[in-house]
Length: 306
Image 1 (cartoon, rainbow, N blue to C red):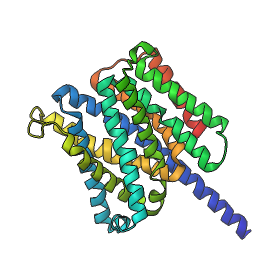
Image 2 (image 1 turned 120 degrees about the horizontal axis):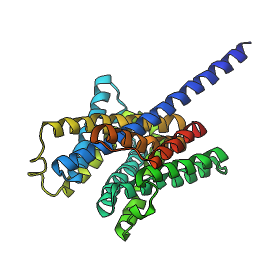
Image 3 (image 1 turned 135 degrees about the vertical axis):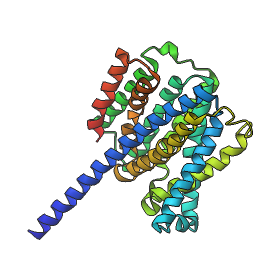
Image 4 (image 1 turned 90 degrees about the horizontal axis):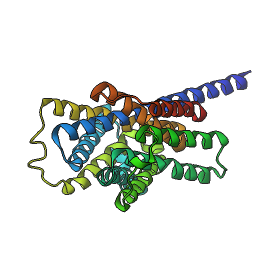
């Protein structure tokens, strides 16, 4: 009887952790959708340089993570920096994951457009799936294959309206789009070991701070960067840092920690739904039939991988 009770409690705990991980992955993807809409608003309203946004938001969000650890009395950020193997993993995550994804995505947008860049970035599902199967020494499950197909197709429909002619692919755009996908895969795969040992706060805090500092020298003109910012731009930028960066990565990495990289990467494709809905409510974008079909595909995908 005791063994049966312990088994039931373990199963219930696993179920609740899976449910929490799914919720975190969805929340992270939804807040990334807000992030994209907020950045679009800033670009339209002020013409701010993308690298300024990348550098400042990462430094501030990283500082928020580390401040949270300090307030909680969490010593793990300091312990991580004394662990040489963990520092190597952190540098790999920050460089080949976070920086590669953020920088390449911005460059892909500049070379093509946001729709094309988003579709190319969504290809991150493929390398994540390959890594998950190699580590697990297994073939992809039918549910996973169906989920990936639905996620990719839904993202394509929402971001292009189903018209491939909207996807201009000059060589630079294709290159940076594929690099953004590799960086996105790195976000899901590289931090697994250090997340388990040191937690989301320490890993995100140091990685974001490092990426923000690396991006700073590339900002063209710090003196004129925010000259056209008004009150509304500062409010939106504050929300971008707290909600679109700090909270989104907090939830996403917690999802990776609890349900794994592949499920989190697929569930985070809720991002285009969030971005489209917010664009409609905030900027006045009208839904098309292909948008609604794309929404349906992504929504159907969720229970397949959850």
